[in-house]
Length: 450
Image 1 (cartoon, rainbow, N blue to C red):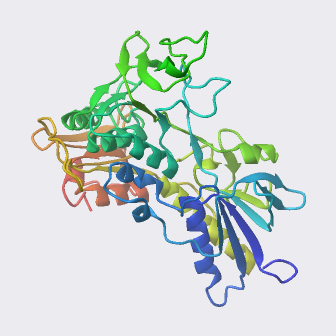
Image 2: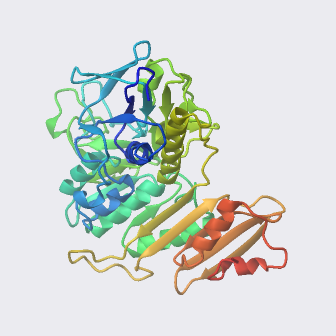
Image 3: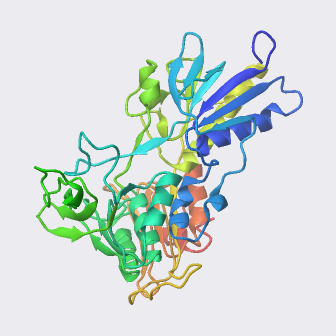
């Protein structure tokens, strides 16, 4: 409760997973009898849509879910959609918005998320252009997803640039819509941040069996734009036209015909608001173990927050940070010690459904064309002296691997068969010594050594 006896005004900038989760936890904790807390939460969401689960955008693009299906549970308190915070007045503790409104706060929480990285490609942007050329799409928001969905048709030639988690999801969703998909990955293999080489090769085989053409170690140089709308002096056909996308040009000069391109080259924390307010910003908005920024009245959680020199960029970390901050804010008001956030042991999961969703699809190519479940956690590349246990079932397209360092499980990759993931994840998250009498192979049996 504020010093003058009124409810503490907590303003949350960001209507994604982190912001909504925090509002829910504050409401649940604040309502508990005997806590001595009273909070009033205002959530400012820049998007006009109801808050949604960004992880499931691929399912919306694939046509499996409607946008309403992936909506998050309603956030309690005051929720304002389609409102963008443009400035933080730290001296008077005010948030100024693009609609002219001013929102006062006692505590401010930045849950501004991240923006897609736009690669340095010829033809991507020109000084006289607003936004991306026609046919070129990011894949980060619901508006991005709906625009892509309306653009794709059976047979559409699509190039996805980027072979990480987002690029793989986008390629798979477009294949579900019967597009002719090429996935161009600059790195040596797909999802190299999460998978080892063997797991990535299996993932590639699955994508190719669904009709996705995969190119690794493939650098994209630029976009070739149709110059039909170009004025005099334009560089028609050289990636500098003013019209819509015609092709994607690779570093070796080869051109991939394309009617649409998806930019899936990673994300970057949204820190502009914090930087302009004079907060400490490195790669993300720097926070301590109480998720406070360099201003003790301002906190940051989710993709935009940098804790312990680490950016997570995962929904699991955003949820844990929101929970920790809710406990910290309410415990502090009740006179109890503030809760501390010590980091998240992040697990990545991805489910790629089998072809043939709600509408008939073209038959996939021969191969392991069924659904693919994937999970990865911790350090999947062993160091010298580590023990590695690995099982491969080529017939079923399954792969399991764990890395053990001393008496600790430090990482693992599972594709195709996740029966052991629950026990493995608990063993890894608890960071407990492995029983000395348990054979390491037992870690990959259905009970995961538990």
